[in-house]
Length: 209
Length: 209
Image 1 (cartoon, rainbow over the protein chains, first blue to last red):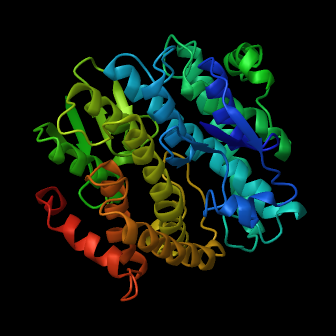
Image 2 (tube, one colour):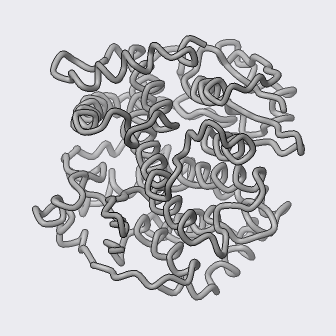
């Protein structure tokens, strides 16, 4: 296997944490998004869609998108299970993973990529340049605040997002909550359960990578 | 099990097709988004996040989000497999599902929900009202056009999105491509492989529901 990573971006971090939680050592190539290396011909030959992370499997399949990589690794290396044991738990893992992507990751990216000068004409990841739409930022901030409230409600009832065990849903949510620092947002004092959970995930060795 | 559906919206349709492809008969409650029933107290008691579809499992777990529902049903009713057989195929299914959601479903929703009068103050699904940001529409249309091009490239190489077999990735992509009619977009003559695939999926009994 061969893993294409980028140490500064949240989506590759999700895959990196998943690999570490599986206890796997995978040969890794760093691709610098800051230098635009994901848009260069040699990486585009691997992933024409010019996104990270990428995992090339032993069979030569090129997997992009975190869920594609996670599903492959979960099937090949079932222990420890990170995508649920029972059918109900498998459902809850992908449910909370989707909520974190759509209600957390998406609005954080909306704010950052549509307002920060470093993303001028790079409002959407991938090979095509799209102009920023800064009007989206205010709504994005409101959505991130609502996401923190939603996490608090859930984590007052459950030690981890999908239930009693650490799963992929915690990785995804943790990475996005941590990444919200780039738009200067973080859970506040009233999010006590979320902050406790955040500290617990942050202490895991996989979160140090 | 109990399935909460909405016959007019694309996301419930994805779950409805998945259930039909599994050959399952599940007791179904229709919730009218047109009438705002998803925001009313009796449905909010089931799903406080006020979105559809919802599946309540035999164990009483309330699953929202299409991937949550699909993962649960795939685990409980493995035949026919709709989320991949080999590890590689499992990876490809969730990879193409994610691409369809982020590069197809998301920009279609961006255009529709930020410009159509029916979605005034309802730019984002869920319990919180968000104002429309019509500036996003132009970029959304360009992204949908790029998504059709991406599908064409993939489907020139592969009979189905994830490989040789019909999977969840085809359901998701089909529903979004079909739904693009609401923003008056569809694959064009140059998307020959995509149109052939579209006709093939449209002919399945599950697509008639």
